[in-house]
Image (cartoon, rainbow, N blue to C red):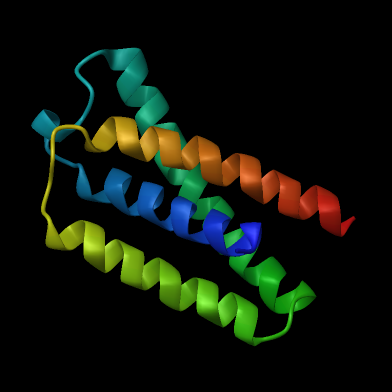
Length: 110
C-alpha cells in the first residue's frame, strides 16, 4: 500500500476527530495536552489539503481521487461508532503518523 494513501487517511481521521470533539468531555483536561490536540488536529487537516493538492499535481489522477474517497470512507466508519473518550489520543497518534508519512512523501518527491 502506498504511503501517500495511508498518510491521507490518517490525516483525515485526525482532523475529523479534532473538529468533532468540541465538547469539553471529549477533549484532554490538561491544558497543554488540549492545545497540542487542537494544534495537531488542525495541522493534520491543513496537511491533508496540501497532500491532496500535491497528489493531483504529482501523481496520476486516480491516486489522489482514491485517497479522497478512502479518507471520506474512513471518516464515515469512525463517525458511525460515535464519540469515544479515547478519541484525543487516537487523533494525536494518527496526526503524528500522518504528518511523518506526509513529510516522507514530500522528501521523496524532491
